[in-house]
Image: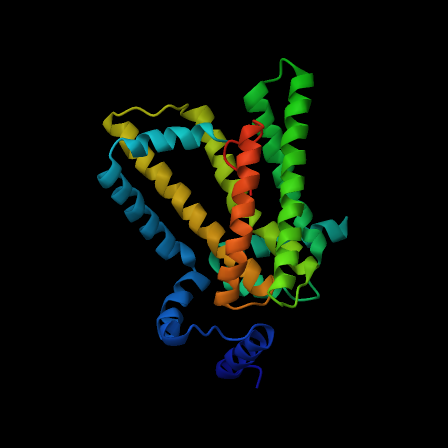
Length: 77
Length: 205
C-alpha cells in the first residue's frame, strides 16, 4: 500500500483538507483552481516570466522613469 | 551542537522548499512537530545583513555611529516584526479564526527570506554598480533587469504572505482579503514612520 502513488497522493490530499478547508470563491472557483497550482509549485517559472514582462511593460509605458525607479530602489537598502 | 546542525538541515530543506514548493513547505511548517528554533538561522541572516548594511552606510571609521546604526536597524526590525505577528493574531481573532501564534511566528519568519535576499543583493549591487543609473543603453537594460528582479521577489513575498494567513490563521480567501484590508494600512503606516525616522528607506518587512 505504501508504494501505491495514488494512495500517497490521496493521503496527502486528505491531510491538506484536514488542515484548511478547500478554497471556495463562488463562480470564480474553477478559475482559481486552474491558476493556484502555478503559484503553489515552482512559482518561479511564472514569476520570472511575468516580472520580466511587467518590467518591460513599465519601461514601454513610463520610459526613463523606470531608470529613476531602479536608482531609488538601489539607494533604498 | 548536534541539535544546531539538525536545525540547520531542517532550515536548509525548508529554504529550498520555500523557493520550489512554497505551498507544501508552508503546510508542513504548520505541523506541531516543527521545531520553531530553526528560525534562529533566519534571524542570524537578518543580523548579518544589518551588520553589512551598517558597515556600508557608516563605514568603519566611527565605531560609535556604526553601533548606533546597527542597533537602530535591528531594534526597528524587531519591533516591526513582533507588531506584525501581534497584528495577525489580533485581526485573526476578530475574523474568528483558529489563531496559533507559534505557527504565525514561524511562517512569518520564513516570509522574511525574499526580504533578506532583496536587501542583500541590492546592497552588493550598490557596491559593485553604485547608483544613480544612467539613460544609456546599458543603464536601461540594467534598470529593467533590476526592476524585474525586484518584482519577482515581491511576488514571492506576496505568495508567502498569503500562505502565512492561509495556514497561520486557517482562513479562506475572503477572510484573507478582509485581514489584509486591516493589516496593510498598518504596515504602510509603520513603513512611513520608519522612513520619517530615517531608519528604513524601503521597509524591511
